[in-house]
Length: 132
Image (cartoon, rainbow, N blue to C red; front, top):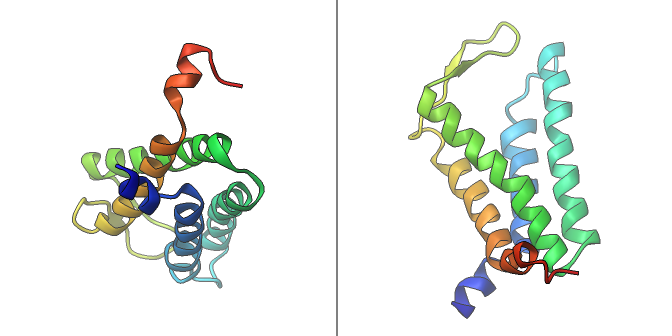
């Protein structure tokens, strides 16, 4: 278990996920000449800013718990939209259907980031009232 906890260091996963989310998930996918896409991309980039803040300006259980709170709902949302087969369209581009097969990379990255927070967050202390 110690080896798993070492690999799933919340700080590392926050930085990794923030950079991948920004570069691959937002910046490279955006048509910067299309106002609705620029609007949505700018809003989505705020997630990366938040993640980098948590990575560099918090530590310990606080960092782990914030990691869980940021990455957990993102992972759950990917699962929900893929399970429902939702489609989305920005601007005049073709609509895209969300499927599990096409979303394996973000599901893995967001899921491992959330898991890193869960493993290091000592949530049992929080629930028992022994937390700071």
